[in-house]
Image 1 (cartoon, rainbow, N blue to C red):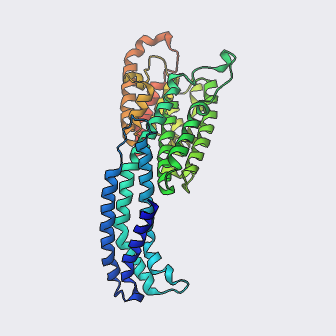
Image 2: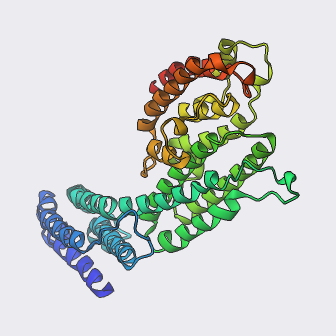
Image 3: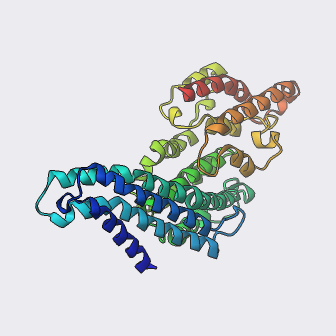
Length: 392
């Protein structure tokens, strides 16, 4: 209860006051010594809190009582961390303001340093047992929604063919999903924890959306225009999610800015048209592509998969080569925590296998070619260089 939490705060400050210089607390080492029992108390509290946390299965609906219970535990741990963090100043400095004493400032500093292990233990507990499972569940739900991009053929149909109006995949499927995440899961969480969840979900969502979009094949002019508009809607939705997460960071600053840079670069990639010049050799196209300013911002796998949209039918798409659905292939590249590095090497190996198989079939392609036959050679030139750049 709130009373119990407030009592813990009172007990912490009462314990620390024994080292108050004005109350005969002795030298500054006394503050460090008295901090040790508080660290031990926090450890015991964390052990009990860990027992109270419910395990959440990734396949389980997140709207469960167990998840709601875990969010409440996170709130309690946040309050405890706030008490421990502010206790030194509330004990040694604030009671004597506006006067200032070097002795009190030094005692407060020594106490803050001694209490750091307690704060680290609280942070580790919340991240490992509450926030990480929560983000994995939320990201798995986002991935399920993203899979509709391929299952429904959202960008494969030209609305002009049947006279219907163009519809936004993002507006129909993703906006409500992000609003639900914000209202149900971010709002109950303290800001410091909500910002972690929002940042992780935003990072995963960007990488997943870009990777799924890059694998659309074929990708006509009308589809590119609709996808460009959806990228703008997608960015706006994520900006609102991050804002509701309570973080001071913008979308462009999350994860070092890499996901956002790729999201913006995707718009330029969609209208790259170097292959329209049929006189250029594969090497010339590859060199021109590597000179594009936005290439450094996209993952190699994004560029590989996008080039498949120009390729002949006989050049098998990577997910078909692996006998997987597109969203399953993307899921193998992008982990639910938003990490992507492990998937890049695997994507290149699959791309090489697709190109090798195409070279063996190319002799029978002949006049049946329905795409640009240079794509396979371009991929084999680009791959090693893009991976080398990424490792640097």
